[in-house]
Length: 109
Image (cartoon, rainbow, N blue to C red; front, side, top):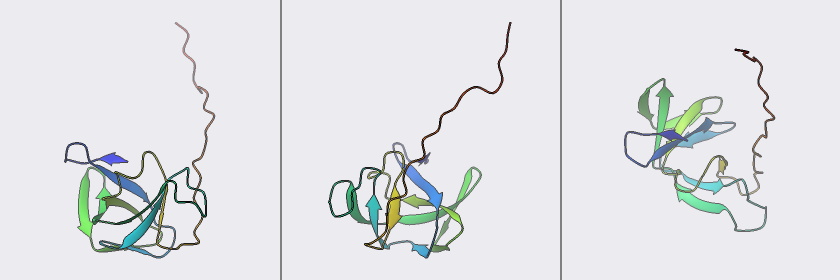
């Protein structure tokens, strides 16, 4: 999630893995706790806007093909940290990666 100029709103930033994302398309928004066959953490909403993010500038686009990174407007209310956005009813959820991070550089004073 990337903050926008509108107070309290965010761009959902991610990569298009297959197909095309279009402005106004109906999408299944599956959160990290979604279980196939259940309705928990599943939302059917439309994407309000698609924007191409280039540094601190954004450019609105009508659609975006696979392989690109894109910002989506209108799904920030349904995702907290990460999730899967699809229009296929049989799609699987992309799980959140867990990192074990330890410091690489230590400084002694």
